[in-house]
Image (cartoon, rainbow, N blue to C red):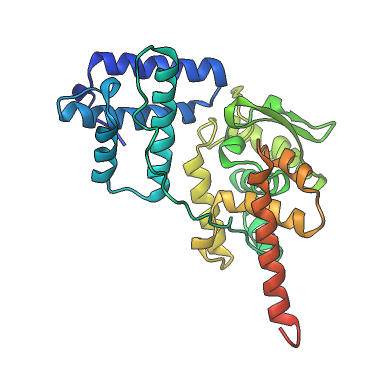
Length: 303
């Protein structure tokens, strides 16, 4: 969401720039994460400016009124609060006499929704949907196979450079959130499709150029997340899967859920997914448990 930067004072813009720079240098956060912090802070700064005040002089009452006027989801409110807390906490630590106006803010209560996964038969149908007789269809099949085989985030998938793939060892070097790198196994089936894509499709899509991206659009460039999202929806619709239940991230959720269903270790799954905290991975145990309950209810004579 764009904000009217003319409402923001030069002092506020400088403070936001300094904060973002410090986050980048100290935490190495990804560009998308830094952009989200900037948007949140510019929103509050513009709101302050419209009321003749500055972000850097915001009081507890200012921040409370700001949230009272916003018509956003609980999750969006929680994210903005997190941005404000970090900004003002840093100012309070580094600048004598500056108070943190977010200290007594009431945190919104978030309901933790379970990740959505689809069944293994539906996954098989989805993976088989692309027409692999065409370069684009072969590319799509390789992307779908890789995402399900390795549990990549969609941003990680579309941003993969060709150099990240080690065909001999069958692994990927993936750069995840916060710029953290991890090695991810590809799996024989996905590797076979990638090799075929590299041999038969990528040279056609590259058009004689030397693009860095592993997966290319028909313009010889890397793909966008939005482009892949549209492709997943289209293939889901073609095989009769409810498109409301399918997104690129559902492939990641299905990867994690199916691994747990087949006895994978939670710690190993945490490493594969690139989660910094085990608690984030543990939610998939709830998904697997719900699946077992449905299986029992559907098939047990006393279910």
